[in-house]
View (cartoon, one colour):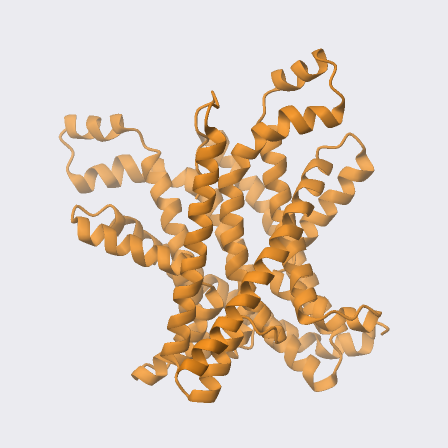
Length: 218
Length: 220
């Protein structure tokens, strides 16, 4: 099969339209993941042992099962219980929920990397709990988390093609749509691959720059 | 109900076979590429870097579809199983190569110098001194990769490989039940990933017996 440039240019607008959805889904999913991840990380540190254990078990379960199956549950099972989500909403929630369990571990590692001395010194200085978090712990815990968070953002970006399985028209969905209409898979699938490769290489470069900045600041 | 269960169990066989085959390919490729990354030959190094960046940069999903739909037009006809093993093995091999490289690099210079002093050949150095120590460091990240690979096998259902996820969809279409098939396969996936994790922990404990270095930090 020969590469056909005319066909490639013909489907390009569709793919770019899909790329917008891909990027939108990535960022919305990431937003959910960083917020839910924080809730999970705090839940695991709860004083109430049963809360900590329940949150831990849920996180382990989500982390131990495939994202694709979770998307199917959100998209096919929830409507039977009266919760109807649009494909994009289901996809973004699934993506965010799945990655929140990983990001919770990033938070946990970041918080645990603060030495006990900092907590004890805060107590000695008579700082309240919220003051300790706000002024002592969080400012020190966040910089080392940034490279790891950036990695998860890139990983989530590469997971978004899964959303095409629940009929989200992101870039892969558009490509497969074009392919099944014309029986030409070479151009659409290759172009999606090139799209991911370019963005991943650019992101990997920026992630390295950020990582170096963070190292200098420490 | 019993019919549904037997369909799902058949899917489990496919999922397990796919996991084992692609894990084997990924392990082989990881070592080849990971050691190639450390080679003195710049051509080998550049080839390996290109391979790693390519497979980590383009999404696994895209690679799978490429292997299944585009390769036949180039004269390479693959069954869904072969395409899935190829895509998963090469993709996770690229991630594994970085694990191998990192672990070998973590072995101190003194070990390499000791090998030279003992007049060991390059192969003997790796085989008897470096790899046995590096494997202990590799185990936790490889365990994580294995669990991620298991979860990724679900996407092979999209190229009509009758694995757990595919069979659950089949049951859904045949019986109209949605919660039950998905709940069952989620529990199965969770059980298998827990099994892999505990297997890695046992192996870690075995391999660190008698090791004088402190237990390496576990990655997430």
